[in-house]
Length: 79
Image (cartoon, rainbow, N blue to C red; front, side):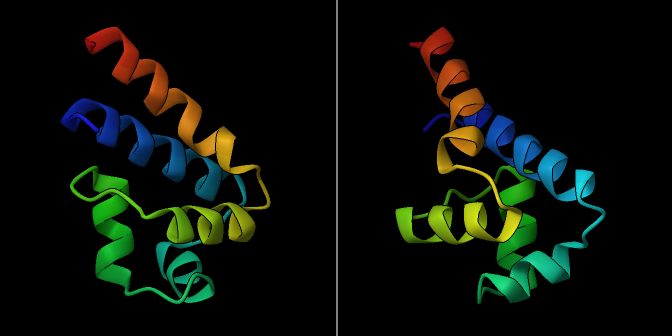
């Protein structure tokens, strides 16, 4: 995953979280991860494992593909 696609993933994550009026801490706790790791995901400095992706999607009540598709499209543009 490229740096810009990680940033797109983070932005997508933030959009879904704020749409539901939830805090970063709330999502991190519901996914059994540290707040710092969640913040790194939103900042685009880390990328999730599949297990983490599935937990995030479940917490946000969206399909995992909804979280990944914009990052994939960015990755394709750069490829």
